[in-house]
Every structure is written in structure tokens, then in C-alpha cells.
View: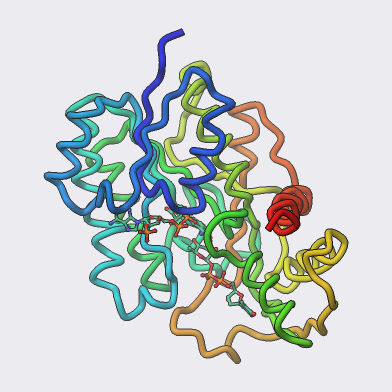
Length: 301
Ligand SMILES: NC(=O)C1=CN([C@@H]2O[C@H](COP(=O)(O)OP(=O)(O)OC[C@H]3O[C@@H](n4cnc5c(N)ncnc54)[C@H](OP(=O)(O)O)[C@@H]3O)[C@@H](O)[C@H]2O)C=CC1
Ligand SMILES: Cc1cn([C@H]2C[C@H](O)[C@@H](COP(=O)(O)OP(=O)(O)O[C@H]3O[C@@H](C)C(=O)[C@@H](O)[C@H]3O)O2)c(=O)[nH]c1=O
């Protein structure tokens, strides 16, 4: 089979590292990983050079400005990286017939709903990060309607910093931690998303895809508090945590965070599971696997 060349931007991020790690399982895919230093997606000349040099058939854009609170004051940069730069990305891909897969977020939704969000539900982001990501989605689909937008939520992994690793760290430093119980979402293991993306590249032409906006998240809903409870339970079982701390419930408005968060940002993945004929595993199972990997790394250190 011919090798499929996939250029990967944001390669040092959680998703980027998860995709490059999985490369070994996909002998017919060649990933060309580009860190932010190798390819700054806001630099059009650099983008053109990179595309001309590598001539990929696919571009997976895992690059993003992901600091939700900082985006409130650093809005210019967030809007460029997550928004306006993507018009160039989409048009340079279109010129070269490169299929663009772009990753977006549950934070494009307001959180006012109480039932899971479908891909075509109205987006009305309540923070700057969500606004910038929505600008990006729209520019991509207007410029290059053959692109795919894969929305995900609450991403965790063994890589970089993320909520799971923060809770493990806090738990080992404090006797008591407090976590909000009034935001509901779907935690997603970056490696499960990475596998979905690579399988998608191999198989999507064989599926009847009617919507270029696709939702992917591990199954099951929870609050950050519920998520923390499981991180602590499994972390203790796997000896990543030595003392179980007191876990206190908190409310978002008491935290005085710079950015607002949607109270309910559960993505509906029913269409994804139906169209691609997959069953997405639950987040607890995926969390246990991540913690197992972290425990192995920890015990070897
Ligand atoms: N993390 C989450 O909870 C969620 C993430 N998403 C989306 O998933 C995608 C992947 O997120 P995730 O892997 O967690 O994010 P990370 O923050 O882990 O990684 C993002 C990567 O993008 C890179 N980057 C930032 N600016 C640029 C730029 N101008 N040019 C090139 N690269 C750049 C960063 O580089 P550097 O390391 O140099 O800063 C970083 O390596 C993003 O689109 C994000 O919006 C969606 C829902 C939830
Ligand atoms: C560490 C910590 C966080 N929290 C709260 C703050 C916040 O509302 C929530 C989660 O913390 P985070 O910093 O991970 O939240 P946040 O940066 O909002 O996470 C989001 O990131 C972007 C990139 C996305 O796209 C979203 O899907 C989502 O994952 O938990 C506590 O209540 N106690 C704690 O000890």
C-alpha cells in the first residue's frame, strides 16, 4: 500500500505527542511532526515552505493556544493562532489538495443546554478561547469546505501538563484539595482521539460522512470533581498517590477564574459512533490506562 503522508502541526502538544507515539501501529502512515519551533502556523511563508517541501496528503492541525484563562487578556494572540491563521492554513491546503483535519473544542458551546450538544447545534462561546476556536472553525469551513473539524473535550494524557497530572501533583502536596462540581463534560484521552484521527485518515473515504463537523470524546459525563475522585482512587491503587487527601466540592464562581467556563459542555458522539461504526470507551477505563502509563514511568525514574 502507498504511504500516506500526514503533516502534524503542534506536534509537542498532548495530542501531537499521542499521534506520533501511535505512528508505530500504522505502517502505511508517515507522520511528519512539526513542533511550534519548526512550523509556526501563523507564519504563512514558513507554512508554504513546509508544505512544498514535504508534500503531505493530509494536515492534522493539533496546534492551538490552549490556556483558557490567559486567552482573556492575550486575546490578540489567541485569535490569531486559533482563528485567523487558519484561513491561510485552509487555503494553502486547498491549493495543494491536502485534506485538512482540524481539532476544536466543546468550549464553542455556551453550556446553557442540559442535553448533549450535536455537531450542528448553535455555537455561542462564553470565553475568549472558545470565541477564537469558533472563528477558526468558521474560517476553515468557509475557505475549504472539504476540511474536517473534530471537536473534543477535557483532554488528558501522560504528556505535557493537564488536569490529571495537576490533580496528582496537588494530591501529593496537600492534605485537602477543592474542585468544582458544577461543570459537566466528557473527559477524553488524547491517545483515543489520536487513534480515531489515524483510523479516520485510513478509512474515511469508505464511510458515508454527511457532516464535516465531528464530535469525539470518551463516553460518560462527569464534573471535574467526579473526575478528580477517580484520579485519586485509581492513582492511589497504582501507588502514584501515597496519602488520600480530603476532596472538597467547590463552585466555579468562588474560584474567580479569569475566563468563564460552560456549565454543561457534553458533546454528543452518537453520529460519530454510527457513521464510523465504533464504540467509544468510557473515560474511567481510559483514565486507568493513562495512570498505569504514568505509574510505569514513575517507578522507572
Ligand atoms: N487540552 C484540552 O483539554 C482540549 C484541547 N482541545 C483542542 O485539541 C487540540 C490539541 O490540544 P492539546 O494537545 O491538548 O494542546 P497542547 O496545549 O498540549 O498543545 C498545543 C500545541 O500547539 C503548539 N502551538 C501553539 N501555538 C502555535 C503556533 N503558533 N504554531 C504552531 N504550534 C503552536 C504548542 O506549542 P508550544 O509547546 O511551543 O507552546 C503546543 O505544543 C487543540 O486544537 C485544542 O484546542 C479541545 C478540547 C479540549
Ligand atoms: C486544578 C484545579 C482546577 N479546578 C477547576 C478549574 C476549572 O474550572 C476546571 C478544570 O481545570 P482546567 O484548568 O483543566 O480547565 P480548562 O482550562 O477550562 O480546560 C479546558 O481546556 C480547554 C483547552 C478545552 O478545550 C476544554 O475542553 C477544557 O479541557 O477545574 C478546580 O476546581 N480545582 C483545582 O484544583
